[in-house]
Amino acid sequence: MPAPSPWWSPSRHEDRRPLLLARNRIVTAFRAHLEAQDFLFVDPPALQRSPGNETHLHAFATEMIGNDGRGHAAYLHTSPEFSMKKLLAAGESRIASFGHVFRNRERGPLHHPEFTMLEWYRAGEDYDAVIDDCVALVRLAAETAGTTTLRHRQRTADAFAAPQRLSVADAFAEFAGIDLMATIDATGRLDAEALAEAMRRTGLALPHDITWSYLFSRVLVEKIEPMLGDGRITVLDRYPLCEAALARPAADDPRVAERFELYGCGVELANGFGELTDAGIQRERFSAEMAEKERLYGERYPIDEDLLAALPLMKPTSGVALGFDRLVMLVTGAPHIEQVIWVPVMEPGR
Image (tube, rainbow, N blue to C red; front, side, top):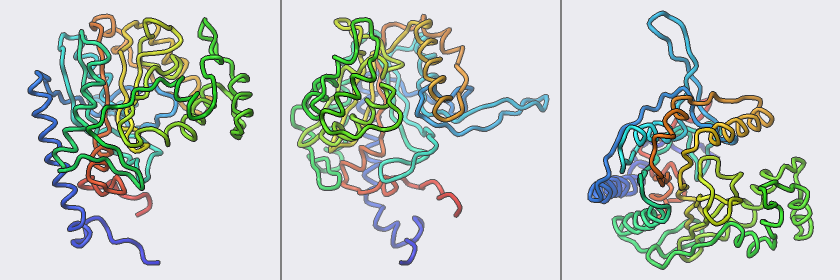
């Protein structure tokens, strides 16, 4: 079977060009929408001392060489979050960033090593405000692309239908038959064996690694995510606190956090938080995430001490990151993320 023509071949570019022009129109519409609400667009640097401190995010490492010729470890960011939170600490209140972020070990129809993220924050505003933002932006993207429908593979979602809002616990009960909160006690202690037993009862195969978080992720990916955003947008809300390292606890139940993800057609589009501003708790969570990363992958990333120093200066804040390329895919019906990226990253070995 012949290899596909490169992205820059005239015939392939001709097929992609209408999708890329739709992408540009959506960028313009999003900027106007957010600026009309007094958001200030900022431009965080990609080069950071810490790329992020989440277990399963893998960064691109490099070296920054000073004027003295000495090298220092540096990374391309996996999100502009740390820089933007420092701007919030400095006194900004509504900020947004449209920029490239970098994640290693990720390539496929929905993943690209370098992709565009729209991230924004509302200082002094509650968690529901950024959920409303997400829904409005999905609808604006659809309208700008000349459609009312999100499409991916054989699935569709009406962008203008009332969104479904579903807690993670309710999703586990409905789609996997598992009482998730029965595996988390009142102090937040996780019972991995209880979750494993619940999986056995429902016929789910158990992996070798039966840490609670790994089991949680397996159920989420295999049983729940494929059911979300079917026919309409889904807001998956109230994640267990241990799965929301950067989010504050919910006021009514400290076992869960103010974290949501937005789905359309089974595809995750956005991830948002009521932001944690307690530096001591944040340090503990980062340290735990990096310990788990070292256990699983044999590496860890440094903690950004400037971020921890800045957090107490932040007002109560809500923020969200949206995978812009994925949203463009869904509103244009493109089957692969590289069809909506102007210049895809080179393939390894080519």
